Image (tube, rainbow, N blue to C red; front, side):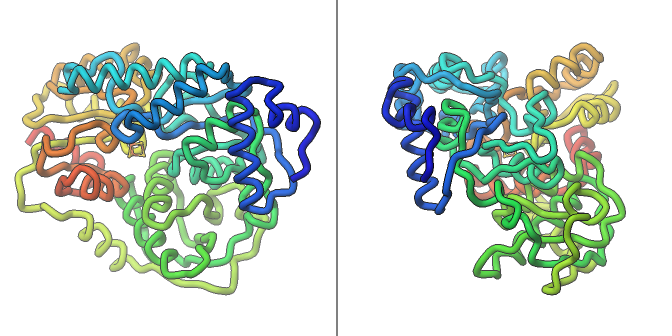
Amino acid sequence: MQLTPEEQEMLDGRHGRATQKAMQILAALGTIYGAERMIPVTSVQIAGVSYDNLGEAGLQFLSEMANGGGKVRVLATLNPAGMDMENWQALGIPADFAENQGRVIEAFARMGVVTTCTCTPYLIGNVPHFGEHIAWAESSAVCFANSVLGARSNREGGPSALAAALTGRTPAYGLHLDEKRQPDLTVQLKARPKGTHEFGALGKIIGQKMEAYERKPIPYILGIEGAGLEELKSFCASLATYGGAALFHMEGVTPEAARFPPPEASLSITQAELQAAIRSLNLAEEEAVDFVSLGCPHLSIQEIARIAELLRGKKVTKEFWITTARPTKQIADRMGYTQIIEASGAKFAADTCCVVAPIQGRFQVMATDSAKACYYAAGKNKFKTVFKSFDEVVLEAIS
Ligand code: F3S
C-alpha cells in the first residue's frame, strides 16, 4: 500500500502506541483487500460496546488503546451498550455487569469518543452527507448510510472502526470505490409493504434471496411507492441481518439509484411472499407475551411521539422497553412524551436494546415490529417472537 508520510509516521509509532496499533490494523486490512492507499474519513461509528459481547478480552483491548494514548481524530459515536447507562437498576441489570459496562464506556471516553450509545447515529447528529467517506461498524447503520444517505462505508468490525477513528483513515477498497457500488440484481416488487414491520419482512425476503448467490449482489429495487425514514431504518436493519447487505439502490428513493440502469438479472417479490415472511417471524402468536420491545433500530422522536399517543392514560400489563438514543430521549423529556409513557408503566431503555442487554432467560415471548430483533431474540436470547405492526405492538403491551 502507498502510505502518505503522515500515515507512515503513524505506522512507525511516531504518534504513539495506540495510533501505531490502529494503523497496523488498517494496513493489514488494506493488504488483505488489495487497497492501494488509505483515504481520510470524517465520521466513525464503533460497534462492540456491550460488555455482554465484548467480555474481558474486548475490554482489555480497549484499555490498552486508551492507555497507549489513543485519541480520536474524527467524530466517533458508539453502538448501544448492554444497559441504560443512567437507569440500569430499573431494568434489572446486575451490579457487576453495570460496573464492567462502565469500564468499557470510560475507556472510550478517554479516547475522545462521543459516548452516546445508539445504532441510529444518523438521528442524533452523526450524519454523513452524500459521497462522504466514513468508517461505520453497525450493520443496519452502514446499510442506511450507504444507501439512504449516499455516504461511503464498508461494513467495519469493532477494532477496524476504532482504528479508523484513531487515525482518521480507512483503506480505499470496496464500497469506497465507484465501481463497487454498481447494482447487479434487479428486484421487482409486486408487493406493497407498509410500516416498519412490513419493510422489515421485505428486507428478510430480499436478504435471504441474496444469500443464494455466491457473490452477494447489490440489489436495485423497483416498484416501491414510497418509504419513510422509519420504514427505511427497519428495512436496512433487516436486509443487513438476513442478507449481509451494506448497500442497495431503490428507484425514486435512494440518491444513487438514478446513476444506474436496472441490472438485467432480476427476480420479483409478490404480496403472497411478503405475507409469508411476516408469518415466518410470528412464531408464538398463540402464546402469552411477557416482554414487549420497540426500538430496533433505535426509535426516532416521531416513533416515541406515537407511543405516547397510544399509551396516554393507559397502563401496561407487561414489561415494555422503549429503546432509543439518550439525546432522543431528552427531546422526549422536553416534549412531555416521557412522562406519559412512564406513567403507563412502560420503561425507557436508553443507550441499549433488547438484543445487546444481558437478558437471556428473563423472558419467554417477545413482541416486536423488528425483523432484526426477531432474528437475534431467537438466536441470542432464546425468546420466541410475536411480530406485529408498530401500533399493534404497543397495544399488545396494554392488552
Ligand atoms: Fe440496534 Fe440493537 Fe437492533 S443495536 S439495530 S436495536 S439489535
